[in-house]
Image (cartoon, rainbow, N blue to C red; front, side, top):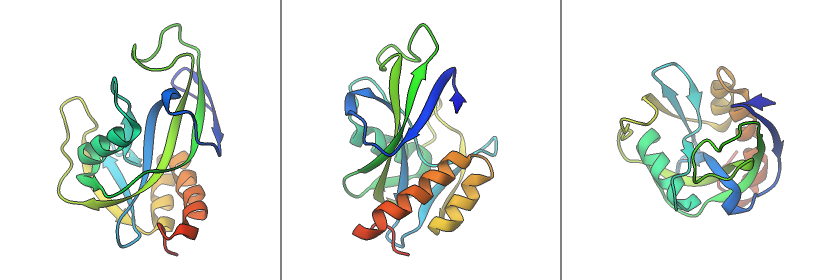
Length: 167
């Protein structure tokens, strides 16, 4: 797949943390529902985004959950896959990010929706936060972003065994 002036390959690997530039979450509520966000443009996506300077992946997840879903992280991240990204740009997207090879990582985590998204001025303009069954979340995501739908299916198969997603 080509995206963002880069060649991307989805891999069932946990990448080295220092090479992760983005992280998206399969955020699971106590009811075993998956959080899906919808932007003002109509895009449907899993909460997540680009790493800030010096930010750990746990901090990135917590920040993006608050900004995009109004949710709090309730535990550790369970990393399960990533897109390996090889940029065709001469400069990194942001100076602190790895370049030309980086990873867009995916993790699952238990969360609690506590209020509306924070919606910072420079962030996604989220207008709806949904908590759906894993199958419904994947179908909803498939409308705009089949990759995130596939990520939910992949995650469901991996983390059911530890009880994060109950079938």
